[in-house]
Image (cartoon, rainbow, N blue to C red):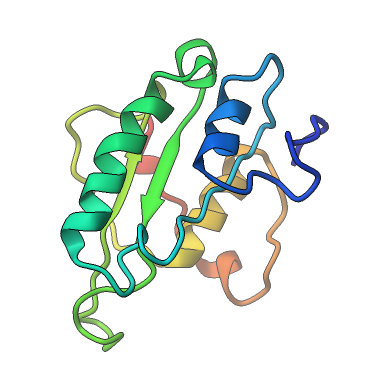
Length: 144
């Protein structure tokens, strides 16, 4: 997805490296960060994850990449409050950034594969995982 090598050969290792990549002269086209198990809400109170995002998200949105290029931040949790019981296990997900509709609440129904389908549509990729993202709805309603 990118021809620009990340700061580290294995990609950003922590928040500082992640933010450095966002503020670099030629950042990668796709940058992923998975918080540690304390900050991601597993094994800690929800207020810990909230404090983590309250500190990190403004830094992301104020980064050089987000101020100067078409960029979008996607935050999603891997599970919801209903112990993965479909169709009642809804998860929090949010798009933010300069290319995202502001003050908008989606009306569609999406799965984790919808994120992959959204990337595929944006970059004109073919379906990567047959029977999963091939059938998922891309989250295009969040973009003007």
